Length: 166
Image 1 (cartoon, one colour):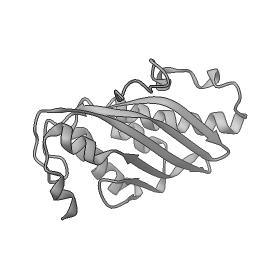
Image 2 (cartoon, helix red, strand yellow):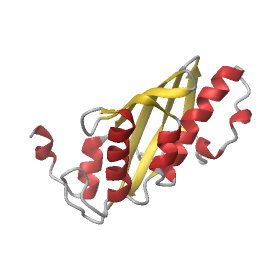
Image 3 (cartoon, rainbow, N blue to C red):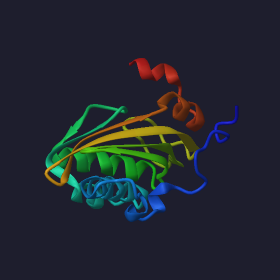
Image 4 (tube, rainbow, N blue to C red):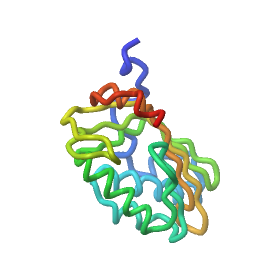
């Protein structure tokens, strides 16, 4: 099956207004708005926008490395991503919001133009499946975990998957 055959929407839900999600409570809409702001930060390569909705002691855990705890570590992680992939783009196909939990799924894409956490720049593009879970506390994102197909990205950008075991 072609990886795009199952796509749930042709337009990223990140482009939608939060009020268009009519089945959410007011609290859930506010929580969704926080996550949409975080995602728009990545889409515009604005680490400051990402940090604006993260709790000061928040944790950002991307499967590519150790969890980034607190604004300083999240900033360092974010700068590493946007520096290596300046055209990084999340494409959101679905949101699931329940109380203080917001899940989104879709695809992430970009071009590996610089070193990526120790891996060399290749100039090659990637486009892979992605899912994120976020927990909200006191009007800020307290915890984020990103899951995406790292092996698929390695293949697409020309890296050796054997290095994943090191």
